Amino acid sequence: MIKMKKVLITALIFLVLTGKVMAQEELPGPGITPDDWLYWLDRAVESLQKVFTFAPEDKARLSLQLAEERLAEAKAMIDKGESDLVENILGDYEDELNEAVNYGENIAELAKRKEFDELIALATSIHINVLERVLERVPEEAKGAIEKAKEFSIQGQINALRALSNQDPKKAAEISINAARSRLERAKTQANRRDTIGTKKALEDYEDISEVSHEIAEKAEEAAEIVARETIKDLEDLDEIEDTVSEESKLIVKEKKSTAVDREIKTLRSLARKNPEKAANIYSEAAKSRLNRANTKVEEAKDEVEEFKKLETFGQEISSIAQQVGKNQSKVHELVANATSAHLIVLQQVYDKVPEEAKLSVEKAMNVSATGQEKALEALGEMNPEIVQEIIAEMPEEVKEIREDIGRTEIPNVQGVTGMSGR
Image (cartoon, rainbow, N blue to C red):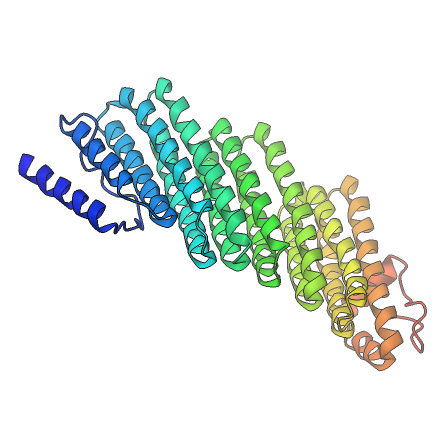
């Protein structure tokens, strides 16, 4: 044992002298732990290593490495049932992570700064997952220190993602949506356990990282597309959680869903300024997802239809945004016109299933879709009336019948188009 420790110490001294500090791709083994009589020597060697590390990049990487060692030590102590030592170790973890972030901010070369910001963002994902797992196994008196360390890790990740997004928004978006997905998976686990407090905390963590994802989406087209598409999946995950949680938790999930829809619209609006055609495609997918939920979960239909109406109303904005930024509007109008046909079909299916008290809400949604379709066709008609005639000719008879049932049989202001009767 002593021989092994000597080898480890020799290796650490070599690292000090050569300045070669390797970043860990996953949480390292704990090495010498605080309950070992050689632990003081291990920490002394680390202090020496810090003295002989000079460049900000090397200092940052070393501090991150030591932060991960502290976290591994804390986990090892919990595994041994010695959680009384955990608070001090996690305090040291926070100090090392804070030093890593501070040194990282002093890296002058942009490429190296970007690389380190990405490293911090990825490393803290591992840290958060480890802390969440051990939180479930410690006595109550140790939970506070772990929760504090976890919040520190989350904030470190958020800061790193914001910094990374200044240079590489796409990469920052990819990491942030993976982090958000991890939070949702955590919420699913807690919901399945009927842990109301745990579910609520996981959903709050999700909302925090989701907010950052949508901030990043504002910075580049690729980032906006990634986040907007992922938000559709997030909403479907939130649907699953809503179906699992206790009645008292359903309201919390509904609030998170409403916030997610609002953020989706904001991100799609940003995407529309860069690529309105992509925004139109994703809006259609998002709106259809909400309708499918209403169609399969009739008891929740009213809430889902309200979410759909928000998205469908935004669909009417896309064409005007395209016009403002000087993009090709014709394809956008065509996409919206066809999307609203699909939406009307699903809305009719929902209408046929819902109880009487929910039918008015669905009728209003139908009128929103019909209005969006009319506006798209009117705008398209000003550019090319022949295309409008083709769209109407190919429009499913079911859609024409639905429009007739709600009194929307005409497309005003479109030359040569006076009626859309399906009968």
